[in-house]
Length: 293
Image (cartoon, rainbow, N blue to C red; front, side, top):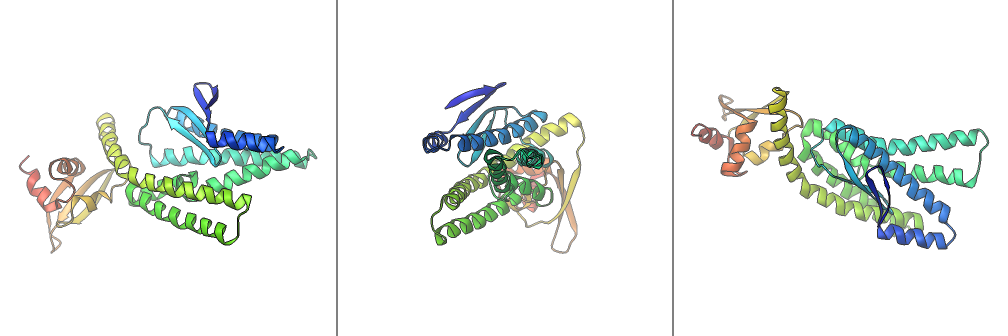
């Protein structure tokens, strides 16, 4: 349900969040629930501001009980640096709020609501810096890892980390009995497991999209940093592309079992090989086939 608009961004409250808001308001916790919603909204607005800096337009923010999700109008692959900044700016907003209201307490503006604002933003900050999908911390760690092992491999590693940490949270919830705070974390853990599974399924699509955009960027800028890999001739394309690093053009030196160079393949030839032969063709077969194109 749309509740209002900030500039051209629609602010939408999820039905579960709406039900929770009404329920807690009727129980006498209107201000507490309002503070939580407002803190989540500020968090997402800071994400939106950072995204717009890089030309990524957000047309809707939906508020859930566990946080918010921004929906992009123009989806494009972002660089690891951009992803780190966009993701980090959300928790940073909560940290700024914490510092601001801690300062108010120093000047004797002490009250229950100030303490509650600090508490809520601490929870949002801590949850979002956890290294799990789809939280900001998970995306930041994935972006950093992608600089060394590539987007796909880093996504898979973060998915497994998410499964492990979320399973631990759920088991902790079960073994320690049902409480409001623990159940809330358990719900986030379940959601994160589902989201991590979807993130893994989308990794291949995001990878292909990044290659297409990289080709366009190379045509536009006329130059790009290169990443050179030495590969045994029997390795297939599927294994090779897992070594791709973001924002770099790849050149593959093909060697035989004796370590002798038998040829080179560019990233463009490798992608053409995927369209012509699929992912299971070896680099030796691709090298021979590319001479006939």
